[in-house]
Amino acid sequence: MIKFWSSLALLLLSFGAQSQDMRFIKQSIYTLAGPGFGGRGYVANGRDKAARFLHRNFSEMRLNSFYDSGNFYQQYHFSVNTFPNKVELKLGKKYMEPGVDFIVDAGSVGFRTAEKSKMDIINLNKIKDSIQWQKLKSSFRSDKVYQLKHFDTLCNRMNSSHRVMVQQLPAACYLIPQNNKLIWTVATDNIPATVFYVADSSLAKGKKVEVHVQHKFLKKAPSNNVIGYIPGTLVPDSFFVFTAHYDHLGKMGNQAIFPGANDNASGTAFMLALAKYFKENPPKYSIAFIAFSGEEAGLLGSSHYVAHPAFPLSNIKFLVNIDLMGDASDGLTVVNAEEQNNAFELLQKINTAKNYLPKINSRGNAPNSDHYPFTQAKVPAIFIYAMGGKGHYHDVFDRPKELSLNKIPEVFRLLCDFINQKSHQ
Ligand SMILES: [Zn+2]
Image (cartoon, rainbow, N blue to C red):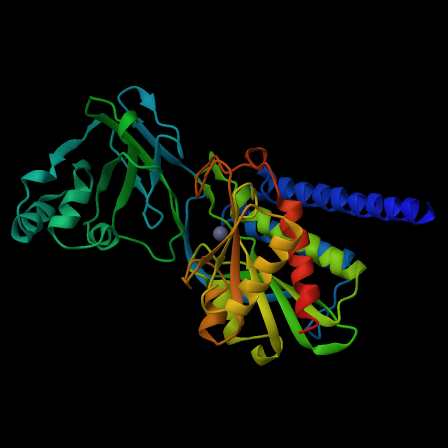
């Protein structure tokens, strides 16, 4: 009977810890993806606010710092194109909703139409070869707005990528109709033109157009990775490493926020919860926690870190990068699983024994998140992302309330078990 009550107490205790962890994860997601943090990008100090939030959490948890200064920042610099003020598009009498009706190409420069402008609608299906395309391009006037119909078909015909074709558009304003989802990005370079991607369904029939875009190119602006660790009780020189990028796309003008709740406030909050857990349950090996910036701009934070590690990369026993951790209803995918087969099999074994998740998928390596620069430096690493949810991605709908956090406690326990078992290998 005593055994029953004590095991019940233990069960309740662990449930208590779980719901506390989940509350902490949820709160952290709401803060990181809240309007105050401006989508953790380059407008309204979003990324700096997020970095300070993480720094404060590391301090409060009393993580150790790798740096003499005692703080958790690793500063580096990169250039980025931003839209801090106006990003307006009016078609006919209707102002288009930024992020919903249109996005502006991340590399765009500023543009303002003269009063009562009309756009030229150009059917690119009429362009048969590159000579005709060059001729058409040279006729474009830098103060005009052009709607380019069938742009993607032309890219195919010219045997050129969409990106290269956009980069080669001469200065002017272009509207490119889109029937796919509008997905925004970050650019570290400018293009000569101002390019809008406009949802097909939002394109008005008329030709009246008003455009006002203001951009600001930030040259070599400072950015921070946030790094802390918990020393191991038995093997302090060898490290498990958890990483998650905290940056997202930020704001496109003063209206549209890309909150990045799933990408990657969720993974960042999850990593913070792991830090909290392991601080309360001291690990045998040391565990480092790295929140990267600059991921959306091209894995810049993790690449910088790999070039300037806080401790030798060869001391990393294993690294787990966490990105997209908002809903694991359908399980988990492990990137670089084929190369890290032992780790993948261990995850499978634990998952089967404990029945945590419906499935764990295996994928080969890909440069799709911050594990990649580490794998290139021969560090044993995987990237895990949760599968499930509504699939908002790089859009204005990736909001905290859209995340179910279904089965995220199970992923949490899976990773704790994984570290525990790997510590005995
Ligand atoms: Zn991401």
